[in-house]
Length: 268
Image (cartoon, rainbow, N blue to C red; front, side, top):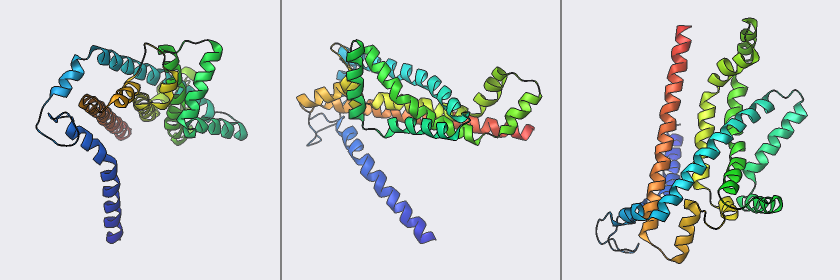
């Protein structure tokens, strides 16, 4: 048994090494004064200074953050409604159909989704730019939130709702004081997943951005095509660290919710 555990740990170590080595390589050369990714000539923060002095890049970063926060917030609300709708559908066939339709958007290739949105926005006359990017990010984030919230709803015992009804709670009281507090970990998970997906998305965004509007992923791609610049390394490092901060923040929020729930059980 110990041998199997050691083998599993070695396997995980190799997997994480393969995943993180390119990122660490990129981060390492973001401090290179030589201006290339071949020879490390010395430590410098020049490329990070250039990032913060690039007004256009800062505006694009702000656009990306606004899109991510708005799409995550809206998709979280819609995802909660969608998960509740799926959970409380009475017909099993209808419930399975809704879950399948939700999962199809997750497994569909981003290129197909992006091209579909491009055709759709062109047909209905929506100008490519902020609105088209926001709508597309909401669309592909909602299924993610549903996937995060639905298991928490399925874990919740129906006796909690029955007890609330016996005590005279209205439907709104049940939703706001019983269901939503119980599924809070799933809501936070869905929000942060939607936020990171929006920040990182390239394929869909590439199709629906217009002239005068861009996001960081599209901008990095455009600059990389013009030639390797360590400013891209610095920018990518900052994005990676920001994503790590989001994950750590979610972890601590989740831990606090678990401790609060445990404290509530002990009081009972």
